[in-house]
Amino acid sequence: MARELSLLDRVRHPELEDRRSVDSDPGRLTRSVLRNLERLLNSRHGSACIRTDYGIPSLEDAMTGGSDGLRSLCSEIQASVAAFEPRLQNVRVKVAPKNENDPTFLRFEILADLVTAGRKTRVRFETRVDESGRLAVKD
Image (tube, rainbow, N blue to C red; front, side, top):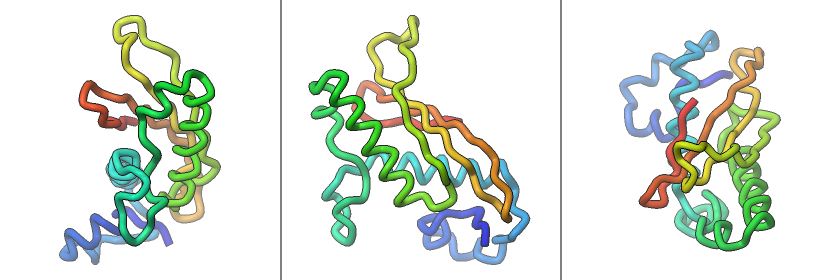
């Protein structure tokens, strides 16, 4: 069954429980997935007691590891999204091309199929590491 709200959103806002539906609003579902991706990608392995593999490894390791470190981080992000965001299937992650207006920041593209009510819609999210080391996600 499709869920418009992530588990964390449903726990935080139990009054919205009746709003779940099989024919979900694609925009609302995409925003929920985006919020969940931000939580996931800004968590580091070992930070969740119940699942030590929740999140991604340290960004510093990837950024100092050159192109091998970036490939490894792409693989880690892909595995983490596939494991912890069940509304996305066929997840692919790649380093996004550098932006000439913003050459110092690391960016990734997440491509996946968003599954809603038996339908698949191809979605693209862009992540950007900001000055504080957080990953911002946008669609």
